[in-house]
Length: 379
Image (cartoon, rainbow, N blue to C red):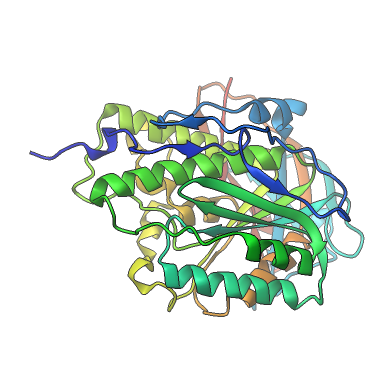
């Protein structure tokens, strides 16, 4: 008889970002509203059921403008080079396979940005090998140093470990970020410890921190590119992880929340990992089996919440083809500052949790547009 491991509570506490996150900011960077408090409550048994945070309710774009859908779209040519200088006539936005009537269009990035942009780098020490973390930290320092200490946009560094998350930044001073990152200790988890129970614990913690990072991003205006440097958290898709009705319901709620809140908060997710770093954790392209949209509760599963799945569906990239992570971070930086902003009024939904696919067709052959793959509407 199989054990429903996923029903087991976590065995240790987790600091929740937004109520106890350590936060360090460069004095030369304008202050950004932060959800930091002086003390950090802990949750000894983190529940899997999603409860939206106050930031979700107060600051997401959908609440500010009911019925409006805003997409941030990155366009590349056949060689993968970013395409700039396009007009509204070059785009056709399809909502649930029907052409949407665009209410606003602008090239938001480029030399004259029309909204703030921030890059957030997450060093995941929870789902990593020690050697992997050391190499990744070196790559982050290399990336920050390549700009001579003067970054084109504000950058934040998040160190995520078993005890929670700590943010360093945002700042345009790369030397400041490097100096403060060096002060942050390597808190390495014993990967594989706890067996299946340990995998569930890391899965729970990772999703909760991602949820809180999205809520944190929603407190700041503009576009946020969230780069998660890690192979990713466990997918819990093996035969030993038997799902019960409660698990499936919670997976469904997580899927809806991440799908909608990433777009509403202006956050695009990227996954970075290197083929030769921590090879025991390097995940195969099996995640592609879960890229198909989940349209109802019966289809929901933990595989649909894998890091590369969420990244792809948010309009980001899965970059795992090179050991030069510094160069891959530069790609994320370039995409953060080269994009188009399109808004339209969404059709009125008739069904609860109705999934609506999104697609952007380009007028010029060879051009490819990336944005959110869909959203869940409510009457």
